[in-house]
Image (cartoon, rainbow, N blue to C red; front, side, top):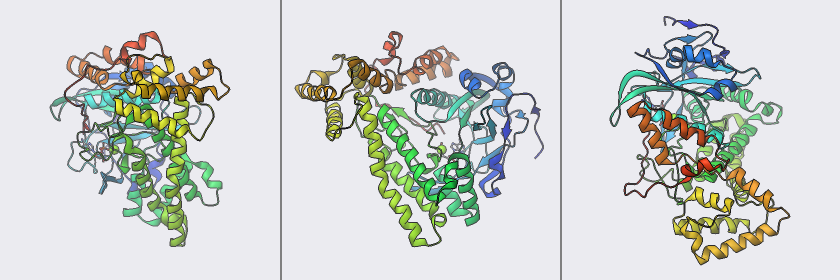
Length: 490
Ligand code: AMP
Ligand code: MG
């Protein structure tokens, strides 16, 4: 491989620790050259948080974030992984992404800097390796909104257009998103190791992962069992948070489940408006496998696949190892449920626990389902003590639920102010509603107008503010005859 031009003094401090893993785990891969790179979005607050320099990146960002020039110290690779896609096991890998390296912040935090849409790799499986502008803007908006909601997620540092045209449902401008992640190790990476690599390779991957994400495991009697437990807890906590804000990932394949516990891969994801557990937006999810209400069951299934990969490491005695894995998997539902209920209690302003809380929570959700109530705005209005705008509020069933709730609130020794403060801290007053996200994308892609997106982001980055200027963004879209559909954008 002939080297690329290198940029010095960019403030990036890059390591390439992943490239020290056995070579089965990656392929060295330069990003493809692009014709005419232009920055369209730079995430200034993230640039600051990573101890990078805004002026430098305004000057050199088009070259850096397109991959046309490489940062000093970068050794770009495409990672290998496999995964169950809609239940079917497949060999995958970074088919349109390259990892430039791991940036180390001043505090010593390590983050992957990855270009997404940077051209074909050995894992492209016939794809063009490219990304279109619309879906990259979508990922930018939703990942940053998720972060502001307090949900672990990969971040978006920049979007550049490439000057190329990309053929998708229609022809779109090409773009590259710079994704920042605490790592890109996935359940699918472990599946790849378990299926296609040696025991030693699998062990190296597990040790690398422990060292990077769960260093406390090293002092445990069985570090790999600890790894399985902690990943399960983080994923459980993550999915509970998704459900609490009405987020539907849309493509919870095992390759899209991180070991770090961050949300990754914003393809066909979307937020639910009307509460209905069977809500699906993705145009390719024909069976509703990844519907809103299925997400806890799917993550349990995905974690079972993760557990299987660890069996050779858990014990030399295979029966014992399988028991350990199964034991963890069978405990997952209880662990998850507790996390979910505890978050839902907060949404209702409950500080303590009572046995009847579960019924109180599910009775409200059932009423919302029956009456077609908007998920976010129901909790928003309960927080604001505004009994208007939602038809369900006028029903006698709701009145009786409301009285039960008030009685429950009165049984805890908390002031009204404390209760409202808690509710405001967990019930977003604004979410990236589909119609708003679409408007922002359309203005940018069709008219090169990023003001709509920037205004939307300003609101989404303060989801718990309950400020007057946000009112407009909390409104529901006009009813549409056509159900909202999302596309992978691949
Ligand atoms: P995703 O559905 O985005 O999780 O991607 C699933 C797999 O398809 C991953 O291995 C991606 O790298 C690959 N992939 C997605 N889009 C493309 C593309 N345009 N060209 C090549 N590979 C792709
Ligand atoms: Mg993926």
